[in-house]
Amino acid sequence: MTARAPFWLAVSTQLALAACAPVVTGLGEPLRPPALEDGRYVARDGTALPLRSWQPAGQPRAVVLAVHGFGDYGAGFQIPAAEWAGGGIATYAYDQRGFGGSPTRGRWPGADAMVADLVDVVALLRARHPETPLFVLGESMGGAVAMVAAARGALSGIDGIVLCAPAVRGSDAIGPVARFALRVFAHAVPWFSGPSGGQGFRPTDNEEVLRAWAAAPQILRSPRVDMAWGLVGLMDEAVAAAPRLDRPVLILVGARDALVPGGAMARMLATLPAAPADRRRVAVYDTGWHLLLRDL
Image (cartoon, rainbow, N blue to C red; front, top):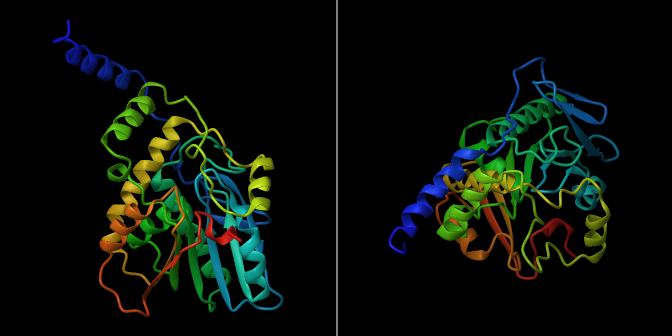
């Protein structure tokens, strides 16, 4: 019986993987031109996603499109965006599919759909602000989306990218055992959900932000396991995209970031193509956490 155990384990694993499949909502058939409307972005497939903006007094001297991380939503940029508005910078942030006020909240949208939304919102903001410098700021998972979009050559209309604690903790970083277990769970019980983040995980040292995070109903606290599987796949794409990231970029890293640890970040940074100092800057904050823009 002992000798047969690996065989039966392999058979049971394959049966489990065949039983279900991770849910990916994807991008629907195009129904209309994408548009920025009052308080929402309406995608090409008709999906309406909440949109927030913070405007300076007078014409903006720069525009930031902020793309949030896993479990978060667009209003999470309130603290930095309000400060930027005081400096003449306009900020826009939409809830990504599967998160916040999205109609498919709690379901993984897939990298292609996330990239398509980013590209379309960039085009719409470029049309709204044709002469103003436009930057994409991706935080955590949003950084991974921005990296993939840039590597695909889809962000030609912007002046630069800011990657704030980009999510680059892919399959290699989590290790083969965790990768295998996540794959089995995502295919066998994709509906299974649990708390996001690790035990004792602190995304920031700002207690006020943590209290607001705990109270906000838009925060996705118990994602399905197939969403976690999808996130790992997106991070793998972001890691693979790094050698093709040739746009002007500012990369912000917190030394206390437990979600994207230093080893994973260092490996990604080592694969970036050569670039002069005026096209790439990496800033490491010794007391910085994962949500750098909300830290004290």
